[in-house]
Length: 172
Image (cartoon, rainbow, N blue to C red):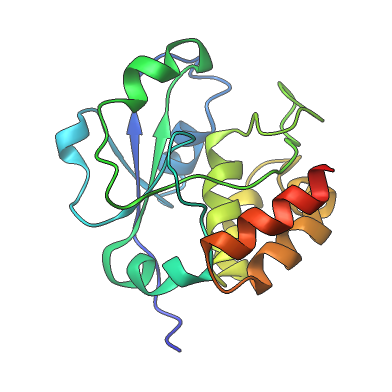
């Protein structure tokens, strides 16, 4: 399989503290492209959203390599309003993972944008790219250490349904 570089684009709603924003730091390091309007996201990308009915899996790898990966950076307070703007066709949710960022450390599923993007990349088989994004944060690689077993298992699952089944086992 090809190891092409994956285009990453993030819709930034401008609702966070710019000093703590992982999206803006990734942009400063030229690792992602940021758009301020939903229409600015390229068509066909895998879009990470917690409202998706499908979990991210290695089955999404080819689409990510061809079309790219998109994240959504908005406040959890306004998530319902912002996330409902996105098309559901190529949306994916992330399985159960624990945040390592300083704001939500140890809180399940409350990931920062960089954690979400990195998790999707890791699960799709692009571990080095995931590590590269996280490496610019002091706490970043701690996300992989904290979730190593989960990420490895999810990355072995062939599709969304297997990821969901693994998640069910981990949570119970």
